Every structure is written in structure tokens, then in C-alpha cells.
Length: 226
Image 1 (cartoon, one colour):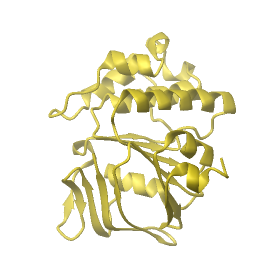
Image 2 (cartoon, helix red, strand yellow; image 1 turned 180 degrees about the horizontal axis):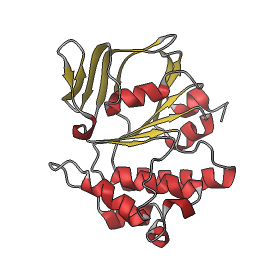
Image 3 (cartoon, one colour; image 1 turned 30 degrees about the vertical axis):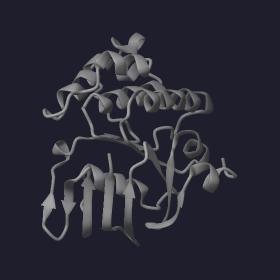
Image 4 (cartoon, one colour; image 1 turned 120 degrees about the vertical axis):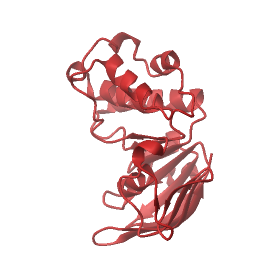
């Protein structure tokens, strides 16, 4: 699975995200300080914002082409996007939130097995509970499970450990590592924490004010900061 960002330009304020890169690792981290354009890049891949210039191509399928006027709607992109606020439905149980994800799966793809996702993320004991009764870490795992069950071709994670205390961060990171081991799904992972990148990612893009400031193996580029 390959994600190509071809001459991409996303206008922001007071700068623009400008990237030209091919991403093919299992887990690619986008690392940089707050305000570097990391979330904007995820939003572009998800179809929530569109480039002023360039193309976004997922395994040969054009999602955006500014010159040709191609803009594939978010729901047709086969992209699983977990935002920082997790966006769970408060009136649904954990099981209901997960089933909603499964119901949104792209018809031409076979969704990941629900039982396998639930077991991998440790959600079995939470299925009857409502989001309001969950810890922050449990909510993140449910949001991740819902995204996995939508049958995505790529998973976008926007700082999934932010706002959690250290024990919860370690627990969620442990489950992310299990997801990486259990599913061959490519993951684009945004964070400003070097330790997360070194623990989880196979490749890292360092973003500074929308520009690529470095790329390579996480341990080599960020090991000293982790």
C-alpha cells in the first residue's frame, strides 16, 4: 500500500504545507511541534481539506488532483481517521459505536473481523458501556476500533495519546503495537512526542512550518529525544 503526495501544497495561515513524498512503510509518523501542519496533512488525506496544488494518490487511486479538479468525497476514500477528540456517539454503547464503523465500510472491501478487532484492542468487557463511563484511554481504543471496522485502506491517527496520563499512554501504546502486529494496514501517525515515534513507527517525516525538515529511521533521527 502506497500513499503518494505529489507536489502537494495546502495553504494555511501564515504558511503552506508543501510536500512531495511517497509513503510505503507500515507505520509512518509525521513528527513536529504544534502548528507545523501535521493535522492539516491528515485532513487532506481524509478529504476534509483540499490541496491548492498537487495530487494525493492512495495505491494508484487518485483522491485529489488540483489540476484536474478531482476531489473524492471523504466517505468514498476508504480512510479510517481517528481525531484527537475521538468523536464517539454518546447515545450508543461501545458495541453500537463499533457497529457504526462496520456499517460505514466501503462495500468493495471486506471489513476486518469484529471479534478480532475487539480482542486486539481489549474491548470485550466494555461493549455494553456508554462513552461517558469510559476513561480517556478506553475512549481512544473504541475510536480506533470503530475506524478499523470501517474497512479502511489506510489508518490516520492524530495524536492518539495526547491528554492522557503516563499509565494510560503506555496502555494505549501497547494496544497500538498490537494493532500494528495484527493488521497489515498502513498507518499515518501524527505526534509531537519523539518516544511514541521511536516505539511505533518504521519511517518518520519531520515537519516544520509545513516543510519537510528530515526523513528517515525514527531511532536514528529521534532516538536522542525519546
